[in-house]
Length: 630
Ligand code: PRX
Image 1: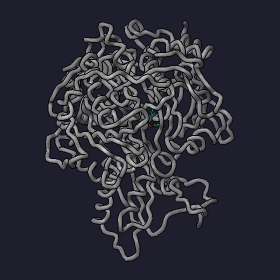
Image 2: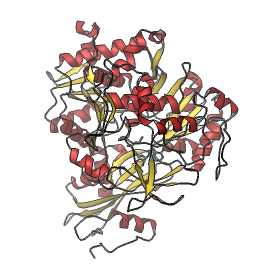
Image 3: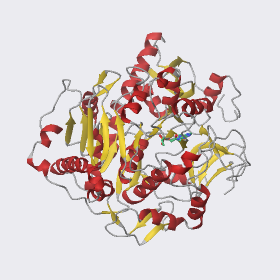
Image 4: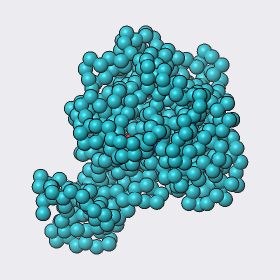
């Protein structure tokens, strides 16, 4: 098909890329999906295993609580493991792992299944049954993957808490989910140092009451406290006879919950996004297959953390559903030297690398010589996610890491969407800084305050106009908030919380969040979490947090603090408060800067006007001030 001439700077796929690509014409696939949306998704579902097929593909009888594949019976863990065991993939590498200290482990599908069954039996022996919640708090180690799949196998609901979070963040998530079991590693390695995860967990457990048992995975081997009757070493449990039996996957309803993942929202405490077995499985399977076009011989590396949605969908579930071989690395990109990743790509012959703009910018700053010392010619496709990528970083990634030959999949999506929503495919012409068009079949729009589509290149609110299989089903414990936050602003349409523009070619350009979410190094944090950590300090009366542009992190957190009567504002106190936020929420939330002030701009109803603080800090016009108190 003749390509329409596209506006702006465009990178066309090479002949070699098109030859290898499974989808050679995006428009054909999109047309098929648009014309028969349910048919498109049911055809994808047919590629997976169902104990019983669905009666209906999409059930819209109780909007916005959409259901997918109703009446069907399945289990995502069965589709990740068991289905491969009767084929040649039984002996294929499911994933291989390298530790920050150079440790190496690898797992065939056969072997991975053994570990998962054993872990499932351990959980069963602790009384975990279908519907129970299990919290997982670990570094990037293989046992994290076993634990997630073990829960899925039993129909228990996992809630993974990112290993970079700290005491209060973990406590809040344990409490809200009412988890019965916590799976934790003794510690994790971060840039050569040990983070005492078990110590943090002990502090959080002292504040949370529902956890009956704790499974402790030994990773760092440093001294920790083990509470008799509550805490058990994983390796000791593995040695028990029950550990070696198989474990049948529970036959589950397609709509049975698979996991909770807490994420920051507009106000208040983090909310638990709920995903289900059936629809999430179909969405992650199909999206990864089409976008990263994984071939049997490929070695795929998603360098995210399993504690975030990117890790859930595209380190764990998506790759295993596709029978792929993936790589997982424990450490940071630039430790001990800025060539660590490039070394790994060369050593293992990685073909596909999926990472975030903050990592790309962080590595770019060390110059071209580091990657150029390595043979990166195995790379065929690159990917990015988490925040807008600036064209300069895009071009560096393309030219230096991708030799000017690897297309970059800039994938826009969210914890809530479960799968890629705006994304190119290898055969699609690319524009640096844009993720291109919506995934085949989806309908998205950019609208103004009144819900009318804005003109090409005008900024507006990004919305999604059609349900999709891997959409969140609700906010756990708070269905009302689900309706209000996502479906009420433009009734019938899903509000993403992002602003964007769409150009004359239909390519979307994400501008950023329009709510009180701050993206720091691609991590999603809420101003409310940071502020409540600050006011939990005895010296603080009130606090406001905003994000300001940062060269590597995308955004950095700046806080304004009103101290209690009689407390003196000193640089030492500022430092103490930064540390306090790090201790309560996690090191990623530690503010860049704390400014002591005597008042904060508020609306007449008492809400802090963060946009006024931000405009002042940036020296720009604060806009409409009619609601300002004084
Ligand atoms: O603002 C968008 C940004 O990340 C938000 C979702 O964050 P989270 O739920 O943590 O999921 C991140 C990983 C999927 C979005 O609302 N975002 C994500 N991907 C992109 C992006 N912004 C621009 N370009 C992207 N590719």
